Length: 336
Image: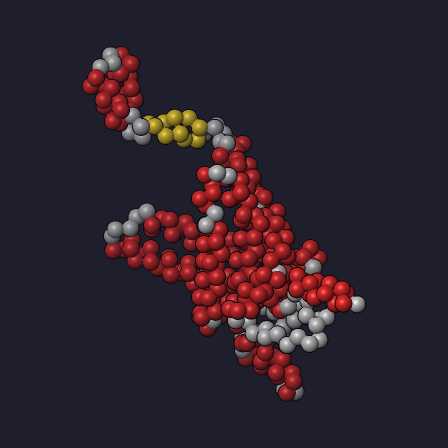
């Protein structure tokens, strides 16, 4: 009997099982920083499995990257004077022509124009990723919401159930999301390479501010979609409002992502010894853990401003639907 008790204690310790410990104190599940680390450790292996599922969804990007590395190239001079110097050096090599050829003869490998098959393959892979981008985010967010709520989570079934329930809207929201990310990234690089004048500097900081704001909005986009019956316009509007109202939690969530990125960066020196290990680490935990951090930061804000008032209105016997309409949101879905 004593051995059985000891066995149960060790089992409870490794499984974090509190149900078989009636003498244990009630755990404080307030969504703060302390409970975040507890939740992250308890759900780490499920998050790792979810991370692998996310990598499967990113296969088109990996294929496109692989194709881009294998596009046939040809050397081309960086300076317009290179062909003349090269010809002069071939006709009559001398110290002077050799010197100028060394000075202006740098070449770069450029893609050949005849590699049309590679370009079509890359475009097709990116298109497939853009089409499935919203569905991937919906499925992952549905699983993460269950983890944040402390509900039982079944990765594969919950993932595809979330996609099935939000098939049409998930596609359009994902398409809008992908386009916004693309244009923000393009504009950021455009102004970054042209800073130095007043207007270019203003443009750069304006794009940077919009990128930060949209980064926080993405904490809420898919959570709002799977939790409420809202139009895409209202999802974007409420995400913008919560990006500002929940600034404190959003900022802490961003710090959590920075911490996870720093942990990943600690392994970069190992690249000199084993590059495979460094490449495997993001596949094991990084993307799912950062997504969990964003969901953990955002869901309490949604619960405070959109779910709790609705539940309290039902408890008080008031007209919940009327109140929901005045709050510029609709009735919460059955997923609640």
